[in-house]
Amino acid sequence: MNIYTDNLIDNYTNPRNYGVMHESDTSSEAENVSCGDLIKMQIKIKGGKLKRIKFTGEGCAVAIACSSILTEHITNKSIAYAKRFSYKNLEKIIGIEFTSSRIKCANLGLEALKSSLKLLTKKDS
Amino acid sequence: MNKHDFPLLKNNPTLIYLDNAASSQKPKIVIDAITNLYSQNYANVHRGNYSLSEAITDRYEMTREKCAQFINSKANEIIFTSGTTASMNMLAYSLGNYFNEKAHLKNKTIFLSVMEHHSNFIPWQQLAKNLGRSIDLIGINSNFALDLDKFYKDIERKKPLIACITHMSNVLGTINPLQEIIAKIRDISSETIVIVDAAQSIAHIPVDVKLLDCDALAFSGHKIFGPTGIGVLFVKEKFLSKLNPSFYGGGMVNKVNILDSTWTNYPNSFEAGTPNIAGVIGLGVAIEYFNSIGHKILYRHEEKLSKYFLKQIKLIDEIQIFGPADITKRGPVFSFSVKGIHPHDLSSLLDKYNIAVRAGHHCAQILHRDILKVPATTRVSFSLYNSISDIDKFIKSIKLIIQLFIKK
Image 1 (cartoon, one colour):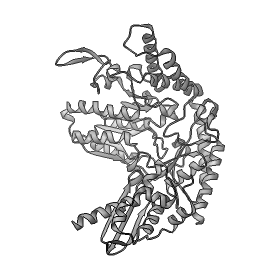
Image 2 (tube, chains in turn green, orange):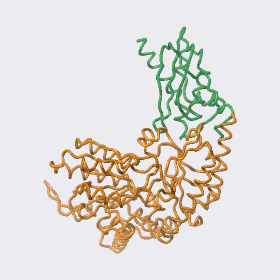
Image 3 (cartoon, rainbow over the protein chains, first blue to last red):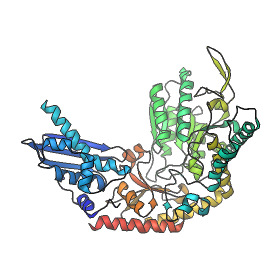
Image 4 (cartoon, one colour):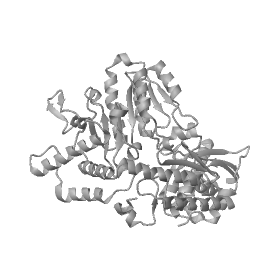
């Protein structure tokens, strides 16, 4: 299976929601130590929804593109939906089944998103 | 060259295998030797007084002899381990016990080069930590060679306990002039124990422990056409005779009493438990195969490939090579970055062209992060069975991949 689809390359070279926001409600990062890739996510919450998401980082096309597609999909969704959202869901949206050596890359943005949401829960409690 | 000796390459005729620094493919005679052993000659070694066991014990010990000849040591200086990593860990463990009894050496440090593979870095880092010693690094210069002027000045002052240096970097391809370096260490700091990682060099250049004059050296069988799970730890007899075994169990004891025991002679005292018999036999055949080709012919072939590779890769503007430009100072291992393309993407895309290369930090995080200042590189490494046409296909593919990323 070719993972380097036009959509993936496009989301790598023109990542959506890439950048930093000054005021976020929660943020976190995820790192792939085996290659030094790092994705940082910031989230602004409004009315129980993920109103704005921004990410920055360094990584391979898979890590960047999957983060980009993830942020596009998850913006304006409820916190409960984001918490339920799994790696399998992400693969379905992207339409690619990644091989074992690339799952870590594809999941990096989602990992950062999940740990941001965990921090949010802690803050609330 | 000799591609037909390797069943995997015959069965995958379009595969271009360029990950030899990680592990080499296996020739048919090695595979056959292991199959024949298990189907015709197998028994445990050093245990039975029946003919099957005696015969396999003889072959096992003859392989020790073969390994000794291969690196110009004595047979009783060869310890079979599961590989370079096990060799280094085992030695570090034994040395830890040795130094615990040597209180007068308390303040001395351990020197490690920045180009060490984790397996010749972490065991010594942890030993230093456990013994309460500090670590000093041997840096590299702009030619990707060790900064020896600084190193010699440093050891003049510090007279280190141990110095660990690789014979050839698994990332940069740099071959360190160890004969000269160790002679200088002996001059400046005669008590320093010098430990050499020959995991890469063993596959490309002659390794002669007498010429090198190192105290210990390790290599793995799987990088020289042998099976996985077998390696060698060489320890100079003068030094080995002072060390206590690292592991206890069957086959390494003399007399076992309730409160204490005595050990059999080295090197068997360092091989507790049933060893990797098939691995040892396979390694012996791999060494025979290696010798049947000979270092000279292998070196000439790999030199030709390296020259051609460097010439072709320099024509691609987007590529930056990390390693010596001087072909006489390096082996056929090349790590590089491609502008705008992450190593993981590059290796995944090369895989689509059936080209196997390595991407990552190649078990050298410190070198990548602190020295080269890149999180990861892509690595290409050659062996006997690679050809100029492999390089042509690699170059053609990499150009197509660059186009794919740059066009968008």
